[in-house]
Image (cartoon, rainbow over all chains, first blue to last red; front, side):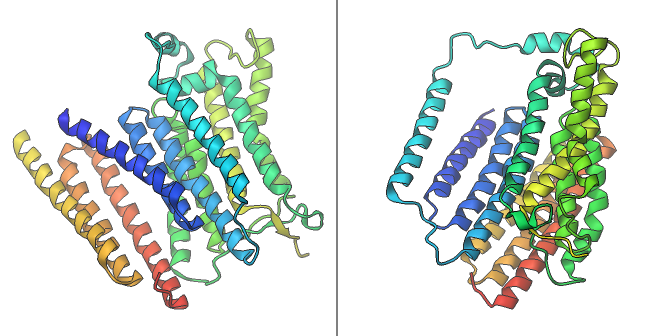
Length: 313
Length: 97
């Protein structure tokens, strides 16, 4: 017990320290590395809170994917050298003030909890068996809060549209400007040949096991996206242009199937996003599989960035 | 028997932790990128390897043990290749950073 609490205290100190050093870092690159380490430490903290689902998502999205996106932004800023990238003093003060305000609000909310913390957890556990799922997190995501989950996936596509909108008109529908590693037959090529089969199996496993144990569409989709990016960066597969019909189909297949099952619920069950009794689990698995594909493609394309050149015929 | 397993775990994981410590000291103290990479790979190889070997007796059945070993193998693979890539970049640019 004492060893564990010492570990927890050490972890919290480390998280605070890394957070502070990320804010204090003078160089953008250093700050991003600090942010990635922060994400990984945070996922250990989630494991200590027995929230393994959140820990997996934090490590994959918070540390890995977001880290890669910001790293891409830093590289872009470096290319645009000469222009002063530093915001003016009032803007920095405003940003700092707003961040401090959010932090203070969160601190007040967390440090002064109500006497009895309201929780729906016992009700979830009581009724979980009806859905046929074993993982309460998947139960909350796909049964009780299905609308939130659906909107979350739609937001991902909106974010991608936002990135694509940065492209000038002339290259709309073109190929994303992912920086490809130039050297053929390097060690990276070897990794890109060896790792994807393993990664795809891991992704399928994560998606499948999500119904029973920690895992799910977001975690599996992130692994898929990472494998796809690896193959593209190593130059083994070309980056597809964003106007490809198959690409757009994969992007929307998850939300569309989710929405279709939700609408069917209005006829076959009692409400929108309600599952007909007895069919909950197979339907949820179908949605998870489709969502895994869509999330994988969406995250991969987010990391690949806005289109930069048009397809040569 | 259980006690013997526990003693094995504690001593081998401690040995692994020692390599993590040594690798971290090396990362902080070594003068340039290539020697720092050398220190880091020792942590991947031996540090994590010893931790995994130490945890094997505590693993949840054969599949748990296999999962632990495959984690080590995957870290080995990615560690070795990332080290190669960073070292290649250092050699190309001749940077010391």
